[in-house]
Length: 136
Image (cartoon, rainbow, N blue to C red; front, side, top):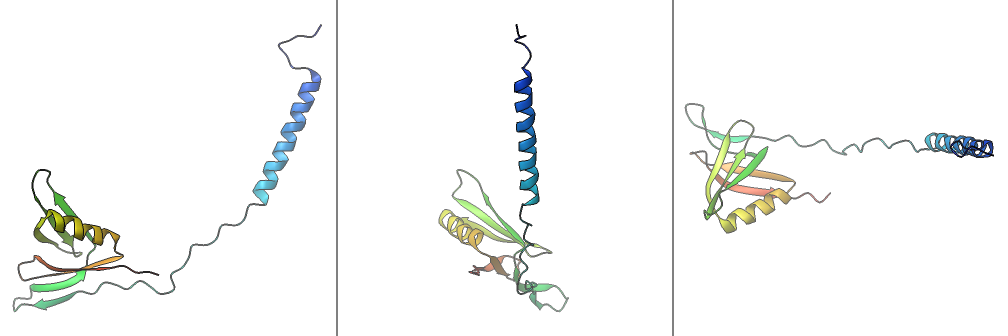
C-alpha cells in the first residue's frame, strides 16, 4: 500500500522533468530578449530662454519677457475669481484676479502648451501670455 502523503516516484520524475524544461525555456527567453533601444536624441538642442528687459536708470528691470519656468492658478471655492502667477527663474509675477472663464480658458491653453512665454510691466504684473504648442 502506498503512503498518500508523499508523491510517488513517477510524479517526482515528471515534476523534475517539467522544472528542467521550464528552466531551459526561461533561460532561452532571457538570452533571446531584444536589446533595449537607446533613448532618442533630439535632432536640435533645446533653445535656451532669453531674457529681454528694459532697464531703468537704477539698473532694475522695469518690464520684461521670458519663458515661464512654472506657473500656477489659485482658486478659492465660493469666490468668483482666481489669480495666475508665473515664475521667470528669478521672480514671481502675478496677473491679479481672473474671472472664472478666464481662469479656465488660460489654464487649459497653458497646460496643453509646449512652452509658455509671458511679459510683465513696470509693476511686475503679467501683461501678456503667449502659449506655444510644438507639433513635432
